[in-house]
Amino acid sequence: MSGIDILGTGCYVPEYTLSNDELSTMVDTSDEWIYPRTGIKNRHISKTENTSELARIAAERAIADSGVSKEDIGFIIVATCSADHIMPSVSCMLQKLLDLPEHVMAFDMNAACTGFVYAMSIANAMLATRPDRLALVIGAEVFSKMLDYTDRSTCILFGDGAGAVVARHNPRGALQEAIFSRGDADASHIYIPGVPFAGRQEPPYCKMSGQDVFKFAVEAPIQSMKQILADLDCTIADMDYVLFHQANARIIASICKRLKIKDAQLYCNIEEYGNTSAASIPIMLDEMNRKGLLKKGHKLLLVGFGAGLTWGTLYMEW
Ligand code: UT7
Image 1: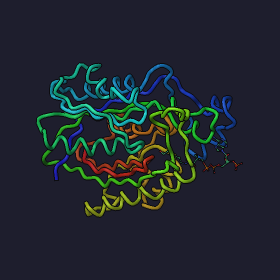
Image 2 (image 1 turned 120 degrees about the vertical axis):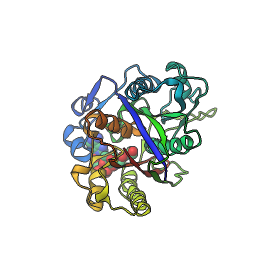
Image 3 (image 1 turned 120 degrees about the horizontal axis):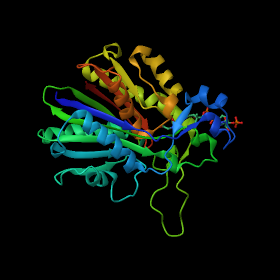
């Protein structure tokens, strides 16, 4: 098995914080309803910055943390479902904004809230073909711009942010993934409208069947986690940290109870950021890195799940 080393991390969230109490002045809700059902107290909301701006700052921090030369970056992968434009991609914009060399392959990919797990899997494969180059892998979202703030079932959940890592191929490393999708062809679980057709344009708002997504989210990640553990011939107790996409604290608690994951194996920050979609896992990685929680050789599971439907678990060693 080969894998990747993460050489540096960075994240950025907008300054403005929207609390449950402030939300309850905008829509018929309350902290008493939101917090026990979701674990969310605040979310950071962009006022003027779009996804490329959040991603730029997170990426600059990751590059600075890694201490690498920009010339060595060969791939930029931005996991997002809230790109500034359909084209140019956020990653192409970043190539210019960060003054990266023209030899980079830059592209966005959309696997919704599983985006960072998919992107790391792609980066691992691409780095194996070009071990002399580095990958800049980013999850970045301004989900708040796609919410209907009169719909209390969705607007309470999401926030904005970006996280980034700089990764290098490690021939003696260990990275493995169990990744899945189950096409929600009628977009009945969670969706955001895309390309407008003449005479048929829906508002660009996220719509979701919360209970259906909840049922999916407490089951599907368990499948991918069990598969990874079986492939590695490990148990969950062998893992130092399990980083779940931060969608809902009750979803995480339900999975932890069933798989006997201990509190000490978890890192969560949903209370402060809400669900930042593809950005949630790299934001956690950066926070943990800056707090010194991640030690060389630590075994990590990154667990994503979201629209598509998509889900997956990625095993890596720090
Ligand atoms: O990355 C994946 C993204 N998506 C998710 O993670 C969503 C997963 N689903 C969930 O987290 C939960 O389904 C929600 C938090 C969205 C909703 O919780 P729930 O316990 O499934 O509530 P519900 O939809 O069954 O609604 C129960 C009641 C309803 O009122 P009635 O019909 O019983 O009178 C809703 O209208 O709660 C009401 N309600 C609210 N009340 C106050 C729904 N949202 C709110 C709200 N504030 N924000």
